Length: 316
Image (cartoon, rainbow, N blue to C red):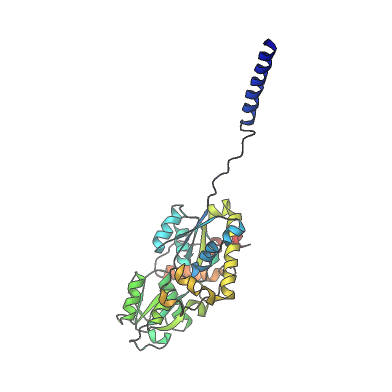
C-alpha cells in the first residue's frame, strides 16, 4: 500500500507539473491580433467605382489587405474624418490637398483618380457650346474644386474665366433641379449627376476628362504611408485589377452602377464610363496651377512646394 501510495503521489505531481508547463505562455497557442483595416473615404461618384468593385469582388482580400471603404455624403465630412484620423486616406481633390498642407496637416497625394466633372446647359438657355457661356449664370459651389474645373474648362476653350456669373448653389441635387427648370443657364456637376441632367434634357458642353484637366486625387496621411506602406501598395494593386476589369467590358457593369454604386437608375444606360488609368502621379504643373487659382482668390497665402505634396511610394 505504501508503494502504491508513493507511485500515485509521484504520478499526481508529474501530472500537475506537465499541466503547468504546457499551459505556460511559452507553449500556449498564439493569440492572433485583430486585423486593423485600411480605412479609405470615398464619395458616391465615378472615381470610387474601381474601389467599390475591388471590395465587392474580393480583390483586396486576394492581395492580402483588409480595406474598409467609408462613404461620405459631402467633402466636408470626409476632410474632417481624415484630419481626425478616422480614415487613413480618401479620394479628394487638389484644392483640399492645398488646404491640408497650408493648415499643417501632413497628407500626401499618392495618385490621380479618374472622375469626371462637366458643364451642362439648360435646354431653355439656347446655349449650344461652351463659348455661349459668356455673360451667363452658371450654378456651382464657389471657391471649390467645382468652380476650379469650370474655370479650367473655359480657359481651355479660350473663354475668359471671369466672363460668366457664378451662382452659388452648394447642394448638388438642388443645382441640377435649377438647371433642368431653367432657373440658371448652366451648371457644373460631377458624375453621376452630370449624366442624369443630360438624360433629362440638359445639353452637355464640356467635361474635364475630354480636355485633360485632372482635379481628382487620392490622398493618404503621411502617418499611414509610413506605417502601412505595404498595405497601401496592395490596395493599389487591387484597384488596378478592378480598373482593368471595368475597362475591358464597361457595359458588364451597368447594373453595378445602380445596384452597388448607388447611381440613379436613370443613368444606367446613358452613363459613359471613364477609362481608368493605372495609378498615376499628377503633374507638378497641374498642382501649381491649382495653387495659383487659390491665390488669385485670396484663398491661399502659404507658399507651398507642389512636388513636396507628392508621394509615389504606394504605386511603385
